[in-house]
Every structure is written in C-alpha cells, then in structure tokens.
Length: 147
Image (cartoon, rainbow, N blue to C red; front, side, top):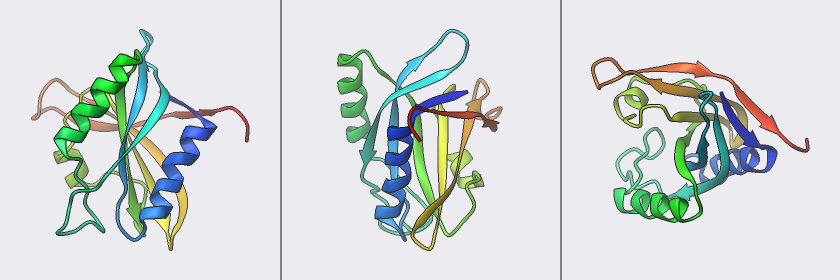
C-alpha cells in the first residue's frame, strides 16, 4: 500500500496538468515501513529529459535523481516511488513503463491526464528479484488528510 497526503497527491496530479500534453515525472520520498507500506512524506518534481517523444515517454536525469536521493536522506527520507503522467492515455502501466522500472519494492504512480485535466491516478508496486522476474502489480493508494 502507498500512503500519501492529500496535498502531495494533488501536487502529483497538478504536475501532470501543467506539463500536458507531455508526460511529467518525479520522485516520491518517505519511509518504507516494516509492514510493507510505503509512506510518502514529500514529492520531488523532475524534468522530463526525453526530447524525442515526451508526449508518451519520460526520463529522469540520473544526476537529478542522485541529488534528490541525497537531499532526502539528509531529511531521513528514502525514495519510495516515482510518478509520471499519461496524457490522453489510461492510468495503466505500459510495456515501456515496465521495461524502464528498476527500483524493486518501490511504487510507480501513474495519472491519466485527459484533455489537460487529471483524471484517474493508480499505483503499481514493482515486485520481483531481478530484471527477468520483475512485474508491476496493482497497489492500493490511501490518500490521507483533508478533502
């Protein structure tokens, strides 16, 4: 399960609206609980470095990811997941999303942005022990706080 505050949930969705018709991307920081729950305590927007097909692909510069990870650890946070948007496409993972997912045990959040407006947001957990066995499975998202 992924637990996220209403504020961070809305930040993720708003980011998708702002970058439409291109995909947005970012990292989710927080804690891994012993019961398997990932608790998001902060979001970090990232630049989509894809220049060839930013409307249906994303890439996070590894240097940006290292910086986010370092700054998070200074605050006692780990990267617990990633997010991106699917402009005018369902909030389901694609074969490319699976192929490019490498952080086992992390959540991968996808927001469908339809005609510029955030619609459905889903999360998927990357399971498996290696690249050949990896799989994304549906994950419950618990949005907490004020509606």
